[in-house]
Image (cartoon, rainbow, N blue to C red; front, side):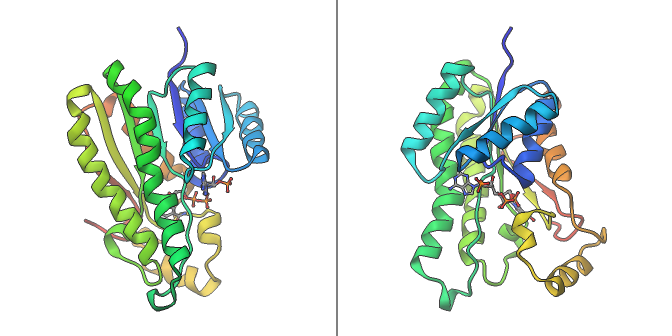
Length: 245
Ligand code: NAP
């Protein structure tokens, strides 16, 4: 029997890469995306080094044609995804008074509209098979708010609302839809912060340290496992106690 496919967007580095490898280790055909061919090749190399089955493919989540082409390639090489992890995202921080329309639109399009695009592209096959798992990566800031991130936080709060609506719509088809909200995780995204900002942030975390990419990957691994079959529409927080909802 062929392996079930797990598709992870933005899997070239950081949290997405850790999720991809965790799902590969769970026995899924791990298909990860990057924005460039070089990134896709590096996903192939990483999977091969870790002795995992899967493939890196190119995707721009802001382009519907790119999403369509990706799904066609996955279906022809393997089979339609059983798991979709919407992970790809960007930040373009600015105080609202200075935020340009381009900064607003880029972040909403990459972090929120992408979730609509990818999910719609995968959903019909999941509905036909009456099984599937969708996990959307949001952020602690969707609940806490954050200075200078009105675009990012609006997108990530939108992802939580989207998750709840879709969970209601597809529950009868055997598909679960959940979100994972990381706190302060050590990746390229947080490397942009200055040393003083990092120290200040870590001081506010009850568990006293930044999270690792594996901490987030473990939560995703659980949500796609059979042990989580009765959990849907939920947001799991992975933030060291930084925010408790
Ligand atoms: P990261 O290291 O900056 O990686 C971002 C990933 O998204 C890369 O694989 C990148 O691909 C991809 N990407 C960017 N723009 C894209 C586009 N237009 N189309 C397709 N892919 C695109 O991010 P991260 O820190 O691992 O974050 C992963 C997720 O966790 C995001 O949803 C983020 O919002 C969330 N999160 C992170 C933290 C944190 O502390 N790090 C906290 C809360 C939530 P390329 O490599 O090709 O550019």
